[in-house]
Image 1: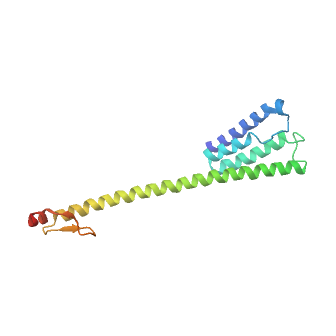
Image 2: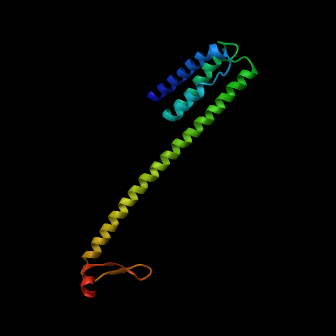
Image 3: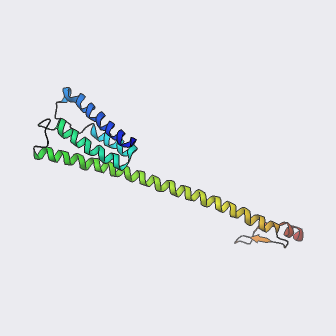
Length: 160
């Protein structure tokens, strides 16, 4: 629930930021300029659900407050095209950030799996080494080139 609150708060900050620019650039110029960072922030910290809420709220806020005529719903083809372009660009941002989150999750899963496998391998190696060292017969292990890689105590005693 906090993630949705953060998304709403960021859209509100975007609206306040854009409203603060009104005296300098006019009431309808750059209607979405501060809403893109709000959507990106919601996608980064809130993930998919809150970011989609941020897109919807930002589109409504920009439509109502910064598209001509002010304080009405969409009236012209230009307004609709601008709004659709914002939604498409915002969805692209959300998709890219969500893909990054999912890739990071897969990477962390693979890293965890690798650590488990390395731990199991070390445990097996210790068990194998202990078993070979405690066998009553002489055990000599070599690599592919015929070099000795392991001798247990009995083999050492037999070979001198």
